[in-house]
Image (cartoon, rainbow over all chains, first blue to last red; front, top):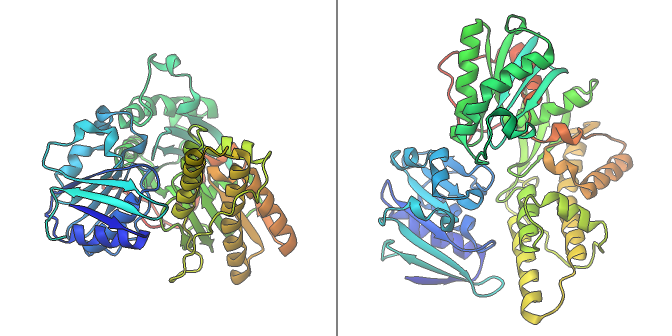
Length: 141
Length: 334
């Protein structure tokens, strides 16, 4: 499904709807360039999952954890050199923790996914407009 | 009291020996050690493994530099949150083992509290209360430091850190990573009003919160438009305009906080404190408001072990020690 958003708030709202129906253990692989709204989308996901958390960029720490009944693990692979560095960040441990993993800059870690992930692609179509394509996600969002 | 302190929350592995929270006897950082001297070959930048491989060597080196033996160590401290979990775990577990083996207390330290404490090392006379702006590649936080271990977050970024805004803007402008220094250098030759950049408003709730993501997007848009229309991008002007807006957001909130709290002292911590525009604006604002400004030297602004040892001393005095059940946390409030 492809969606068009016209503001950061709309991108957040789409993330919120997307995450509401996500099962525990789901992985959302996010693709898109700088300033496309990926972090805003994940902020919406946190809200959709009922987490009362201030979601900030995980670029520096690689992963931020937002704990709750269904936790959200927010990754940013921007600084990673390749899939072999996944081991160093404890990627497989996170997959087994019963939460939802949202992964920014999935481009950098093609080996991380096993084919059962949700793919979310962000494209900038104007200063504020974004085209967001979600594959594998709930049809109703 | 001599504390052996470890920092391993992100890319750097560090070990230090600090006396009474103020005096640095040794401060060893892995990234400053020539890799081939230790074991040759290239080490991945982000690797819990590399922390594991060097932490013991760094501990020995710190003791040697300090001119002390293991028996002279009165406590062991480590960063236990926040950070890259695999990396933090290495420091926590090494510190636990060391404390157990030496039979001395174990002191867990919050990474950002450590950054704030870097000021105690640089300025022997500085004491709380003061307001501290912690700005780095990963954090942007305005803190009310009421006491050495009594502090609260006044405001923070809602999205990207200030340093991250510089890093990512630099990337878009083709200046490389990390971007803080090249943007700073370039900005000195530019007109700081060349571009009208937005000041991302945080209207709802906390007036001390900040936002930098919209600024990054604006820089992306400006670079993109220049490319599409074939117009040359005024890089020095863009860098100078960016520094001006980032600095205005940080300095105004920090000064407002100091005024509200009635504090005479204003401190800055973290790597972004090296930015010359931010430093100059803080100097001017503090002079105008009659407040004293504290900015540690660059060596103490980045991640290091000494700052952990400094804060650990005050945590110990407050009774904040841990036993072998201490865990590491990726995310933790101040």
